[in-house]
Length: 388
Image 1 (cartoon, rainbow, N blue to C red):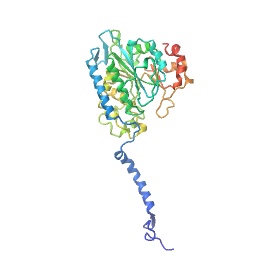
Image 2: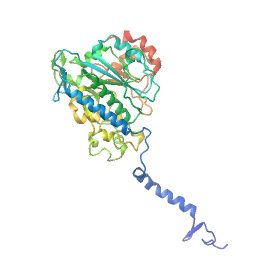
Image 3: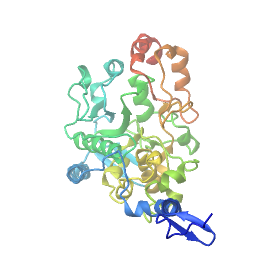
Image 4: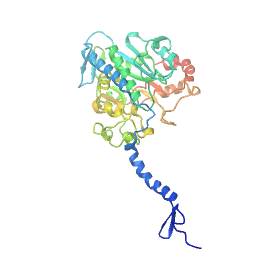
């Protein structure tokens, strides 16, 4: 049989004794180029991020709000700041308040439970602010929440810098609204209270023994029957196996030089911070410019779980307890979501277990609960949850 040559078969090439078709060479070349494409793709193509970046108009709106809040706070004569002691106390007879900040993109499922929580409270001791995604069909509940939805709310997406912006918006609105707002508690629609309002207020404002970390450093000073030194209850995690992957989610050197890896922290986006730290958050531009960048690794991108803990850890580590007051169950997590309690699990035993803490006298809040947990929770509210 005569030997086939490239002249007899126009679609083949002979290299030595081996014959190759042009189709084979094309496929082989593509396979060889795949590693190069993977390396160059992030530099050639913009990162695909389902969470739409912050628009320039939203950014400008926020900057205006933040600057206004910072300026008004600076001119307020009510709160005196002592940076070395992380303090806020009044020299007048006005009472300190807790600002409850709710982030939601659905209905406030547990509004009736929170209504009962606030029912027994002195109205001069708290304020409520709700950031509801304007693109979601959120029904405004009656009662204490009815007129507390902020007007400047923007669209939010999970695992995106929009959640950071929403929290900063709430903080700025609360700072601007009332100079007596002293603590700022960020919560979600899936959060519930674990104690009465009185217990929560006394624990934050006047208790000398609630925070175990403060007790270890010696007795706390008081003036006008309130603590002089206040710390923020914000979770700060420095050793966690996923930190490096989260850090390089925007690119290996994207966070440099402002945030070196050894300064990068993780923690819950639900926290209770002081007014001084709330001002630090809304005045920040340096770290925000890093954390608002889109990610190349979407499954490792949770900026809302790193921005606040990193910022406060870098600026005032001694002013933070490094733990949160919102109890979360991370066993059996799915797609980054914590365990969600079902109606059949609600019991006095569960509530008591959720309260137990190694860092303070008790957790004050808990999440995450299915909406149908409301009915069994209401049944045990007075006799269990609010019975301190």
